[in-house]
Length: 505
Image (cartoon, rainbow, N blue to C red; front, top):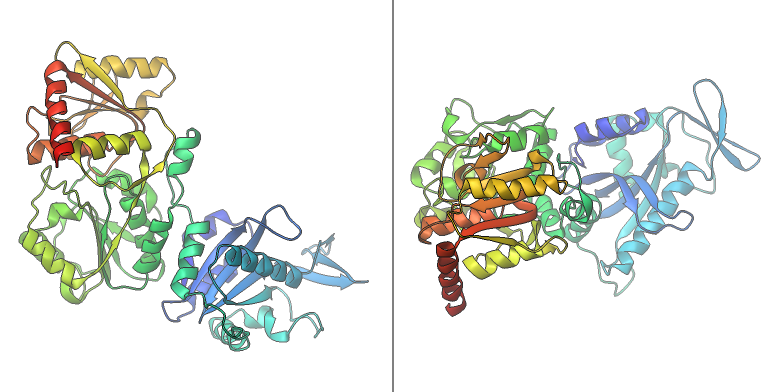
């Protein structure tokens, strides 16, 4: 069964040994790929709490099953419920484990009904893995209270099937919620992508939220063998890729993440730490090992015969029949580092399901509009509405790295951290370096696929041909919070010509 988040994250975040045991069992249950278990689902409204929570929400054979896990012992005395720890100490409970499960079930049902999802069958289950089953009662069905007898893969599978079989049928004429719609709502409502950077204000907080578009892609990734995922710069392709790879690895598959730019190693490594996932730049693939699932980032760089032949050697059963996901930018950054063959791309489109990420979760609205106006590139609807306007720094002299460092020093003086500032020299393809002032200076070739909070763009192209446009596109889409463009009078004229060209199209 698929776990959201994966087992490694649950093991780290939960303080309950009982929840860990249940999570391990859920992952070990071998069922159809449509079964998913969501852990620690927050509910925005609840009958008795300002915010409720379900320990697990499981989609099983079209039925939504909410599970409340209670470790240790339980006791009901004079109509009041207590938990009992291993020392024999009692602690009064607000309600029984079964009532907790039911109240969460009613809250989730009300929320999704309010959102217009449609009718779906729901059941509530209490799990007490450390004790024998409680005696029969009129308050619950025996099939819905699981104790230590159900703490095995076979017994829990049978328990799920029994609960699902007994679920209510839909009322006559009701619109039935589609399973994929339920999955997407639970992904979108309750999943967050892991972001390593420290959060800074409303802009960073908004960027950390998984969009509904990302949720749909994650749901589709679990069910389809081959996928092309399209998204402009800033639409969260790499974050979705990392989550998808973690889910595949959690199911015991051998997983490879590959890409052309070696700089992406530093991006992915902390996001998949502790997982059995190989992270290998494309140039270092030997073909000695085949993988059950292969994830390719910035796939437009490898969209040629040689690239596809190399991938064919690492995908189990080959590219045509194996399991892979390729994430690429339809605005074609391959002019920066790579070769894009339209014929190869057309062939791949026939082999795979195609999906779009259409919401920008990195760049502020102002940055998205600049990219659209000057380049005409589609980088998604602006999801981040906060943030400063793009700062154009018109220079009477050469608008180079030295001029950019002046802007960087102003940012530092105003409270920005030096390590959060990048200077991108658009006309360069040099590897990253640290300037004498301790600032990160890089080029579009090495910045592609990465991001920084504050970006200062300089050394603009002398000609906006395919390569110049691609380099400018990469540079101005790296910023998460502020974007500064250092330009000379000659740059200004070329930019005005570029804008007129886009308006005229």
